[in-house]
Image: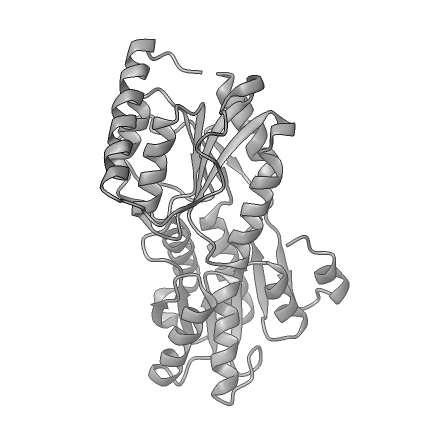
Length: 331
């Protein structure tokens, strides 16, 4: 899988192992939850050892993505998975990535919490000769050839699709934007593309809801006070949009009518809000690509050539969606 000399790989793993033992002796728990046992017998039976760091469980989308990954990266599929939930903390992810190096996995995959701050650990992984697959989100790094491939949706296209619908249907809208986790790939790409299409002069204000329903509600409550003239909300994901519904209704307004809501994700709860006419338009960000990820991992482990980027297919939905469509939804 790697052309790095054996002695170099061995030395890197040994150093990482010593570092991990030292951290453990100091009581550094990290707070990240792992599904793997330390004595799991990794690699037995010719399985591909994969270390996967999921960024957390902040939304329905993330839960569906995790379920898809776990359902596909299985021993039956030739893969031994070590899965770590970073609980939306970059420090937890960095610790998990270093642990994967110490475990001498064959492939490392992770969904980065934010785009920056990965240079040091990515260099360590590269020095260890372990290929990296980026999942869902992107990174900005000065490390050359830091990862082999990326799989996920085109976040900029999602923001553009949302913006084009708003421009076509409500060109004079007074918009409040609910941003995702600041510094994350989805927040950066969706915001830039949407703003370019609708025009920054149409946006009254912005605030981060950190991709969660609770924080989306809190941000919306403040926005209703600060921007009483708003008549449309663009939310970077469904969960924040659902939180916005609660705030709008508590303020005595009708979501989807008094204040239009456009979101991204298309999880079942989001599409239900569309059927209920509380959302007006939803752009899909498909989380169910575990099978594609598994195939990529196998090719990467075998040293086969893979595309630099695999774009997951997304759809769009308006209020013509039916209850049967929602009920048939896998996530």
